[in-house]
View (cartoon, rainbow, N blue to C red):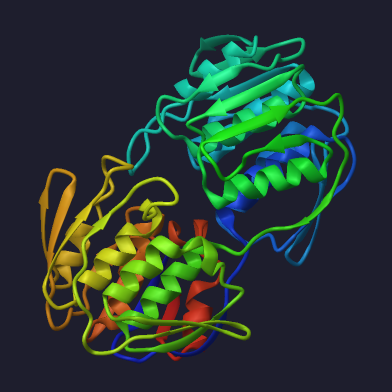
Length: 417
């Protein structure tokens, strides 16, 4: 198992290029199940989660050809119609195979995901929607077994906003009979990306990016070629890295239009952000100010940036309150930040952070993907050496992050333990 060792205190200066979006790539690669010829996708990040979805697609019977950050994918015939527990337990997004398999092959068998380190994300909303569309669903031995000769369009309202639920039903509805209307749909940019891909395949989807999406089913989808958007969470992480280290970073391939909720808060915290030719320049200084944060679904402040922002508030001047409304157990990084000297108190879904002049390097342990990033950021700004263990979480969502940070002047290395 690897760990990352950081000698803190260096300003980060230079250019960094953002990789393709993990959260866009996962549903887009799953959408390849809807066609029977070669799809080509560019800017696919090299991540553990991408490896997991590729393993799942191969299990199903998909052919995959890979060259650099490009993937060619086709599913001519079905070998196994589902996602086994061994894959779903490591990445819940494996459940995105449910909708495409059911609508194209008329059957699917997908493991129930079970618990999650940052909180429960149940499948009931996916299943409710598919049943409204005419699917027969049975839960047996921890698996969802779904069948339908052909799904039928329906009006579906999600009780709570669900990104994977919206994506799953969009894919299922693309080949359904009739019109499907999704109300209280997720508005994330990654949902818009999936709609763009499905429309390039010959689908008919309107309203993606709003809370009401209309999908008119078609008889057949054709393969396509598509370049996946840059990762807004990776971009946001490097923006915070610049702010915390008094750095000056030009972030290339930065999806700034999708980061408004973050940039508003960073500017409030006295981080300078300017759009210029070739990217977005972010400059930090020694007068970070505390700001309050409340996470919410897009276009609100992203829960995937909460841990990183908390690391920044740990060294900002003043008192900040960070409220987590999306996941019920996403403060596990707090105890590790405290090990580095952070002054953080938990009160229900609120974290009260009193900024300190500096953090101190310490051995810490990552508990999930975004917590890993927050500890890396804290280590970059801390005095002394920080050792972050269990960084396999980090590899799920950040492509070569230690190499990119090293290119900006960070003293950082990965070691085998």
